[in-house]
Image (tube, rainbow over all chains, first blue to last red):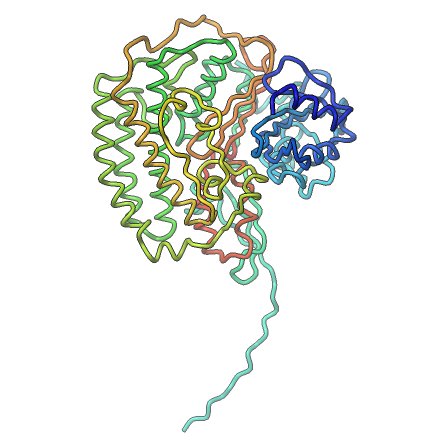
Length: 152
Length: 375
């Protein structure tokens, strides 16, 4: 499917999606409250069939936290990026997608470990790399650690 | 005559118990701890505990300029160091819209494929060793040494090369490069027959590995299992075919696809990949064009603000680099989608209800590299 058709199709399926212009992939912001429902639609739709989540990560933009999902369809060979934004920095929560794409289970644990975004309904929401006693989330831009980070 | 006394079989209560495989265990090939819940000798559940060598490479990247952070990527998947470098170089070149000379593309493709062969050789060695064939280890490492010699000659280093730079190569190849590579291919085509005789054609090995750790195509896609492990399940995921870079769209090679998805097929997929890699090298090695090995670059590289995603096919699968730039000389955020980390997530799923001895074979067939998991 070419990019214009894909854009129309996604907007028809997910009316709340907000298009972000000038990106390598077609990029949409979707509201956090309905993230799981929309993700399920994107996978189950016959024409879209986004069955392969090839990258899931979180980013600390200065004002808000985002979770970025890179999706592709192995059947139709088209890709999109969806982003979920949360402005709550204290206790950010986003719905898990690991019942839709199983690969998300570990990747979401990594995001929780390094950025502190919790995923609701995740079967095993623990830190994956760092110790449970670790304080703070290292990939946050306001993270400081006088002992372990050496500034040159 | 002595009377036979029948003692009633004592009913042992079936209990689950946990054992730790690793952090130091020969079959985890590094510091990975698998917390295995067993019922008798059947695996009921498996939880990987990672992070023993987590170095925070993504965090370090935020402090480094692009030419500097290439040196960090070597240390993720040290067995495909060149390919990791390639991902960053392509990312920077795409963002700055720089076209590298043909010569660089040829050399990079050849060296990437040599990297793939040496990685698969080491995997083959340790796979054989995990299943009790120590000969494999000696054979594999003996042949791998030849490739490392070629790398040493041209790149100056055997393991962590950092040979690729944005815009080209650190320096030109050694005058002997073509001859050494051709000698190696000739040598290895003979030696790979030994590999086939020792393991592929070995009845004990085939029966040992057939039918264990079966991964279906649907699960492979859902878990995002790429590389030879995914292709053994029939998931067509070769980045070189789907999103060609360097010279991969101009050479003839086959994407190795199997359907069964068990340990034996994952083994065979990697063996066939070595033949395909040799085929690619043979098509290129005689035609390396003359020219520069490096484009003239600015002293300080600043990527235009935006998001970039670059994927390459490393020896273990889809290596993705997701970079957000805010226009400075250092990236705002750098994420490595490492194939080993994603492939590890399926280990629990495919090893349930197998014997603990099979877990060793299944783990070996996924070809995990621990620094690539932890980063």
